[in-house]
Length: 190
Image (cartoon, rainbow, N blue to C red):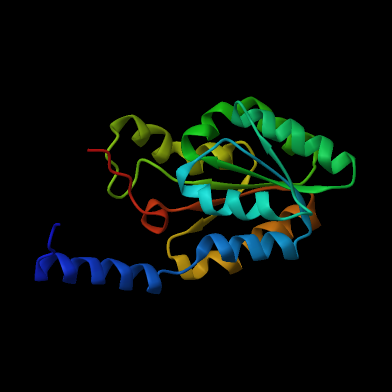
């Protein structure tokens, strides 16, 4: 039997308190997607999106599709729109580089594309390979004609997703919500 020191107990209590106080941004995004009548969600698995993916999987009225690569999602969502459905693409910033050519489909054909991007290569990044694409993601999206909305604080999640969805679906525009690494938390592999 192991006994816990007072310091370990305080540390554990502190972590539980932080988790309890932490904003529930995946739930807030899910609620805004419901309000925007999203019926399809396509994604490449990502730990930062895990809770949002789980919520969409459990929703009976949202079809979820796992992609082999992010650019497939743009084609799937173009087809969804032509079929009368609204969708969202979830990906990590490193996946934006895979989408460069396909982004022209959304911008030239003027169909709504809503994507939610979890950022890497920023605050507290452990993997130097993530830094170049993390740094370049906003500019790459903007140069491809995608409107970008950045979330730096979890408290801004709901209103930012709502604004991006509104402009995407009311204006037939491509819009990306970039969720800062500070919001999603850093990964650490030891």
